[in-house]
Image (cartoon, rainbow, N blue to C red):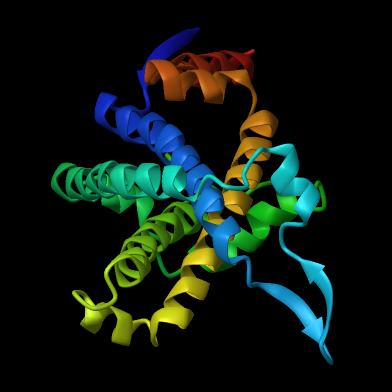
Length: 231
């Protein structure tokens, strides 16, 4: 017998799905801004071997000469991104969801076992509740990354007005590097997240939309096992 069980609250689903388009706009507009000062590359002895974004990449996505557009979108949507993150953290703190999200003392050890299981090297995964150890670490890390993006973003946006944040980041140029690295981190997180969702199957994805999942009733399973033992 199967039952319908609540898995994700409406608030958690709202914050989750709202964050996706906000991050997409932020990354897209960030590329429009970065084009104007494309300084990061691998250069040795005056020769540039690798650029993060070659000219064909910019041309294919029609990024060049859209600096003002990128700044307008970036500086507008950063407030929505910040507010969404703020209310998400506030909700997890008040609702008690943080107990299921924050890593514990065994999370890093168990996360390695989860990885081995996902790679089909280990047959059984470690026991988990709502989230496994790897998810706990990843979801906590993404919150820290969001906080870092806001801090470094403000340091870049208003380096004079927020001079203390700029100093905290190690100066304007280092703040820009951290901001760039965090953006790459979001992209990698998104790609891994999508792969994990595909591997987890449709039911797991459906629960993030509806908030519910269909699971086997443990009581009926126990009854069946007891009947089998009696026979």
